[in-house]
Image (cartoon, rainbow, N blue to C red):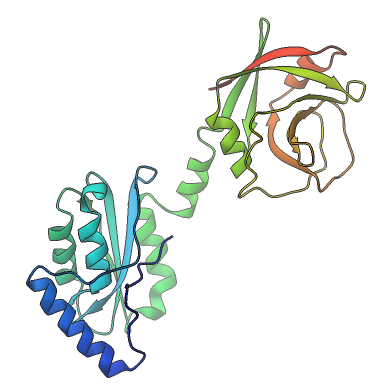
Length: 263
């Protein structure tokens, strides 16, 4: 989520803010957009972009108009879902504002929250998201897609499912990857050292590994696949698990050369 911030902050005085809003709306009518301090380099990672704003005198708030105006090319081809808050105005004029600012997009059904409908917000928002295919249930199903990998050792292929965290996503981004898994601690683990080390952003720490767990040992930066149970450690980070009984392939006292591939 990003916040669109005006380059010059608005006055805390309500009447002064209203006057500035009127002036900016008039300037936009003449083709001049107020400066903002917010920008995006790309929207490639997003299929649908949610755009939220207050309605000012029936129109989309001017900072958001500036944002859409300056990012129109980047938003081309995207799906946009508008949601707005308003004391009494309808959303239709602000929808037209958006359509004129980013004409090469697909606008989904909008959502307007007014003072008279706030009590029903908890019911209306989930229904709206479900209609867009963006409900929590949909997201949970989508989160499991693309997390499966194959681990090929000789003529054997086992499968694994990666976690939905930052380190696992960094690992997935490096595939395909061929490494030698070194035997460690008398067959307890098979380890290798990614170069560079995997990013640990957005990754929870600590786990109690069981056979099949794919982990990172944070102090050393190595990946460790556990073949046996081990004690809880806050320095171990789980990034995946080998499916079914596939860990038996690695339960040998030797080093193993393997290839990791996305499914």
